[in-house]
Length: 444
Ligand code: IMP
Image (cartoon, rainbow, N blue to C red; front, top):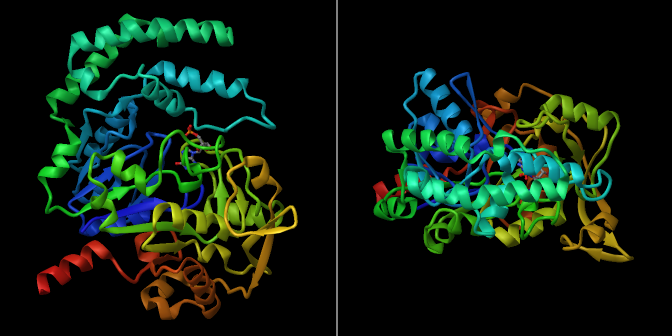
């Protein structure tokens, strides 16, 4: 049995902690999309680990695979591996030879393209890590794959073909002076050195074959970002450039669809909304309550430090996510953050041009014009949330349970875990499919 963990909103739902919990029963954890635009934080034994590229399961001694669907910033990869080693761990990380490499000029492109967009209308608010340009090169067949770093001749040929065209494009289209980021010789030296290190440490694999050879292994597919940042199913163009949805786990890891579809597909839901980039967000609100939530939950981008926008829970977004991903279950976190509010609402539908709309329109203009219809909920008080977590589901305040059950009923899926604080000890786990699945197999 496998499991896939997917963000159901705009990212930052707290997938790191849920991946950590559900990964307990996994042998292999696979990242299948994105790159170091992600920021997954997990807390183990009081130690905090913030990972952007390395699959979070490696902290618990699992094999972590960076799949072909990822774009790899090698400086981040090695910095993370080295930092984990310095903390006494022996991270078992493998990278697909088919994953694409983020090159320094992708970061330059990300910056100049974003700067050229109009702040009010077209800016995306990217993380500036070169993610979009790296995926654009992959699709445009200008990309360089991890496997090519191991072969000096292939790398040189690719760089010679690509870099001069990139330089000419940036200079002509954006009128900027280009520097070392576009120097073939310097890039060759830098990335050959990465290639030699990858080779020396045996980090590069054909990930699809690697996973196929371990057909009895329990695999956890770790999504980054969220459904509404998906380049196909999110609020295009205010999206990331990969597919953080369940289908992306198939394509981005090289496994057959059954590997994902026959397992659990768990949507990670935050009890309210946050968003760190630009784009529509009908339930967004500002003012004191938003500021309080932001402070309480530390709603500032892990990668960029930007304050996150805050909104009420949006059911049309969750319905869309449940449909696109085929959620078999959800988790609901940050219930503690909502404690003590004077007022609590959930958007159960939108009104657009006088019509009731229950899911998300594809046009960003229409989505912006959607007026949220709010359902009011009774609030709950702040309390000792660790004690609540110890007490289990029944120890949750009744109104918090009613809130959670409303969401689960609307999506028609069970809730496998509830978060009442950031750490593992502040999590109520009702079903841990890879752990309990294995126990049931042993019993049978
Ligand atoms: P990019 O992925 O850097 O190209 O950024 C595109 C959009 O996705 C921007 O709105 C980013 O803020 C957002 N984004 C990218 N990665 C994350 C993430 O891990 N969490 C939340 N938002 C993200």
